[in-house]
View (cartoon, each protein chain N blue to C red):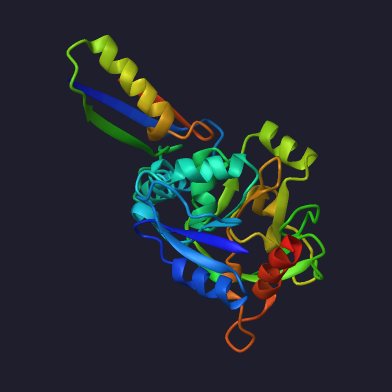
Length: 227
Length: 77
């Protein structure tokens, strides 16, 4: 499976993503934001970081960069596009995903492990995933997902909520919500479920000695579903 | 021509920074501060002599980049 990771000025999880993808057998390439086109890919990843220093709004400047037109065309033709953290923020700013990531409710930068519940498995990312709750890592200042009531209803009706913050046992409530996101939302899909944006970093959970392996499950699952 | 834009959060959208500023002001004995909403202010120099045209250009910029209409309103002043 061929993948491309897009690098923006200020991206800082691009190399971690590259390491993770290659570890599980993706043929990965790095693509600079100023390039006109993306090499043939089965998956495009927008990595985490602070593209353009989070100026104006997180992800807003990156969402207008040269390469983004190719990303949008790829997504609209059904290609898999994954945005992690700042990548999720960029995807909402392009309009590929609904809503916006606002500043965390208590104005703090959050860096910790969290549990997320997989809400939908009828898609190429989570289909046949063995677990329902994953332990992943978050590190963000703007992860407080918000959208209008109509958009939320449409996300729920179409099963577009991908993952939600929860406890170890899968309980979702205010206590297990780290940043104030509505409905504990940690990640969502577009309507066709080929575009996934999420705040947690699976690429930080790929080594059982350093962190945990639930990120490994995530990447292996994408590969398995591609075969 | 210089066009000025103010971008603010929509009514009903939580503004934690505004809240923190309000609480700080209250703590500084500005007890009569009931609410603070924080926003952004832009001064945009447009190479255009016709004010109407310049404002219409800036309006387009607001919709496409300066404001995110999911949570923000803008006002050209």
